[in-house]
Image 1 (cartoon, rainbow, N blue to C red):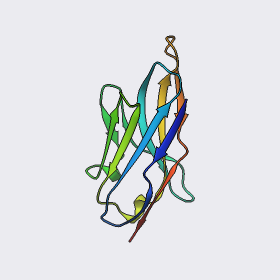
Image 2 (tube, one colour; image 1 turned 180 degrees about the horizontal axis):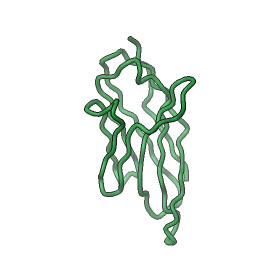
Image 3 (cartoon, rainbow, N blue to C red; image 1 turned 180 degrees about the vertical axis):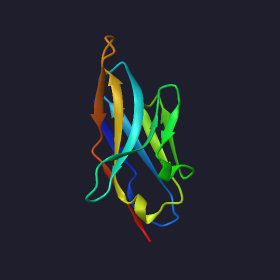
Length: 120
């Protein structure tokens, strides 16, 4: 299973970006899809997650500004980021918990990371 993330870039404060991450390979289904971010010199932290049933979770600092969504037919997760701030600058990583077969053991996969830079 491979995850391919895209959509990062340079944006001014107050602007918007949309990140995408598509899964490919052999698997039965995807349980949780999520976005994490890692700023320079800091640990990787959860930004938002969405379950297969559509339940979402956001870290407090992005509530009301970011929206996570998924397209199960395309095995893709999105992160719509609005009202971006300088402190949102980080490498953003997608993460998916995948069922590879009908034993339904959950396996964790990461995308390669996409850089989001917000200029103030």
